[in-house]
Image (cartoon, rainbow, N blue to C red; front, side, top):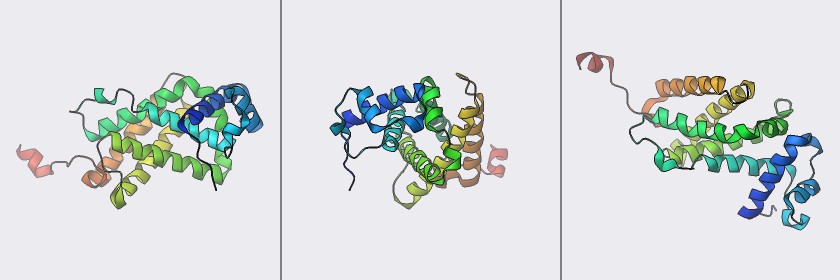
Length: 203
């Protein structure tokens, strides 16, 4: 049985993980080191693990997407809204690039870690869909979240290849795959209906 950590402990665990990952090979990070860095008794982290610390970090990046969400342009297309919201996450990650890359080291060689990363991307996708005002529950919502989670994962792979502070590859991947989803799935995926060719020509 897993013991749930309260929100304050999760925030401290995320901060400690980012600090240690920027200076220490992630495989050398232990729960004792995380507790010491967070200036908390180890008992506060009962039931946690370095893997849970990664989850806390990812959760913090997800929460950053909602900052100033009321400033979103209500006239934006769904695709542009999703693009802007997802890019907010990469902007939150960027100051911690070295730490994030350290935590991801060896990810592509471990199927268990890859599966956990995909689930985090799907969790992020559900949050993005909710912030964009799209259904994220039920069968349709689950399918949308799975698809958008893949798009987020592909953009994240591109982000790893970007130079620090340059989002060119990230934005190109995200734009390409959101456009593809819009063309393939349209309204079913939450995008606006496209006018038929004859309607567009007669307008």
